[in-house]
Amino acid sequence: MTDPAGPVSSPMPVSGPLCDWIDSQANVLGLWLDRLIAEGDPGDLISMVHRQQAWLELLRARMGRG
Image (tube, rainbow, N blue to C red; front, side, top):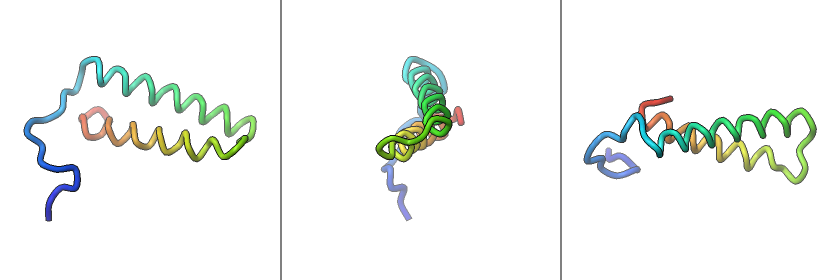
């Protein structure tokens, strides 16, 4: 069975600008999720924000920071 993400030539960095950006975006999305849950969900935003946060958490895990 092959990896659906394709072959990985080298491990992704555990630090650096990309990792910092992923961390900050995941934190911001977490704050928005908390706020949307507390105040209500206009237009099903929780679902969209949750999917984005899950994607960023997947990136964190692949980079070894999750």
